[in-house]
Image (cartoon, rainbow, N blue to C red; front, side, top):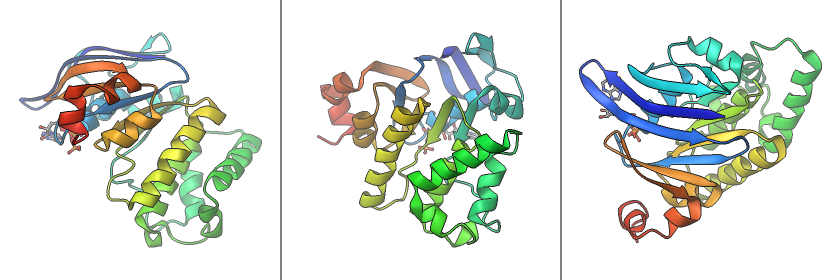
Length: 235
Ligand code: ATP
């Protein structure tokens, strides 16, 4: 479904990605784990077109997408939930969700998807008339994921969904990530510092260090690898 081939991304003269290759199959949850500054967010922004790569190729469903505008990439079916959530604080929950469906014209589909996200996160239905900025951190993460789902993406890019959230909320968010993948056949590319949780929900994973892929394998293989356990799982 998605293939990154030797992708290099730079910020001026700083090279954040040093030729990484990653593939994602339809229906998978892929996770990219790594420490602070490894290049995880840059990988997602390279895919979504926010920070286009300088070299290499990104192919989505057989079409090259590197260099295309972010709105074109969204229209092709890739939607990113950025780190820090970035919901619209003065808009209500319902208005934030409307913004997610901005590029769509199928009213019935939008209505069904709204019901679907309210079913996933009933608290958002209760708070639908409340400004997004008044929600708790966990509720804002739920809203950010739901807003992305309103675009009905084929591929959902999640950047650190667990960041700054209480353990109980983190568990709920990861359960929902698995549910979205199973029920909706949405392919998920999950970037996380919480390697333990990420490898528990993912099918396969990649380890990124200093802009390079160090290891890849099934989630189970990575969970049991001594190198991953020592460096990323604190075991
Ligand atoms: P974190 O988990 O802390 O967000 P990350 O793995 O997502 O880390 P990136 O944010 O992708 O890492 O950063 C990769 C490298 O690129 C880092 O060295 C970072 O300092 C650098 N970088 C990121 N954004 C910029 C920018 N806008 N300008 C210059 N350098 C940047």
